[in-house]
Length: 353
Image (cartoon, rainbow, N blue to C red; front, side):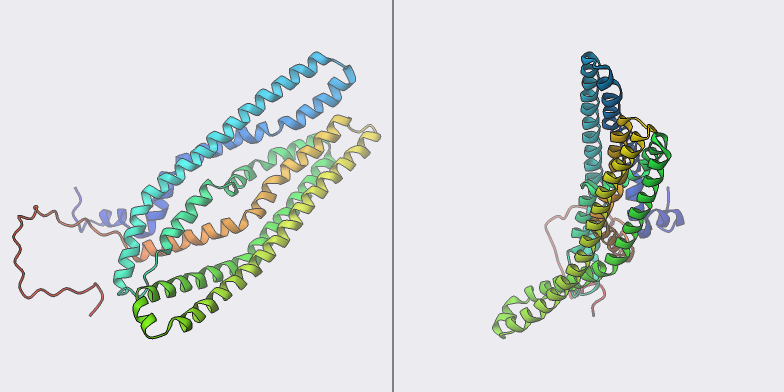
């Protein structure tokens, strides 16, 4: 049994490990979600192979029984894929709920401890909103793109197997989209971080004034305080608008580029099919597979803002929990008997005179 001064006890209560410990407790769920993502991405190859079989086998042979069997198999595989995606989403929902149960009380206590330490000057419930932001990202569609991205090499290898030129076009397109994702990060990170900081200041400013609403109204200060709040709010909107404008431009470029390359690979397939280098089925399948290979990167760019917001929220939670360590449980006391006598009692907030 460890004493309160035992070093191992302090390591267990280290505030810097609160978030990492909670995520480590959920590690198995993330691994299961990644495991299901493997089968989901393998089944996403079904449309390409179905198209390949229809063009190269069914159309040339005219066999209706073959078409019927292929269609039944494809429908069954699609149902399996839908079930796997549903299970994956349920795993992430359960993971986000577990994360909230592991950290919710700790964050709540940290908010109160920070407010008491500052004498009420920095009272803010933003950390609770930050925890909600992290939970929403874990249950949103943006996280699926990060699970699907590691399986992109499977699609790229198949593109090379279809034809080397297909593979080259897919690799070049993936590199360009990855460059757009990096550009999106550099173009929006600073603006969104500054917008979040100013928004937090505006929220704290409003909360402080609301606690003194009667005095503010009595002294006629409401108009001036509203003007100061609107100035901060205008700055937030300006920063968010600039960041959103850049993200929207990059998102448009990535989507346009992906659709363009998906059509160009169809044209390349038609050229190769005319010269008898590939079959017509490979021409259609290559176009479908190209869109599937680039989809994770396109989704990551489209959901990049949510990822940045979740990352900033995670960073702020880490700072709060590091600044406000978990306290030892108080010494258990017997139930009061109902008789209380107090003499010369002085009460002061922690850190206040």
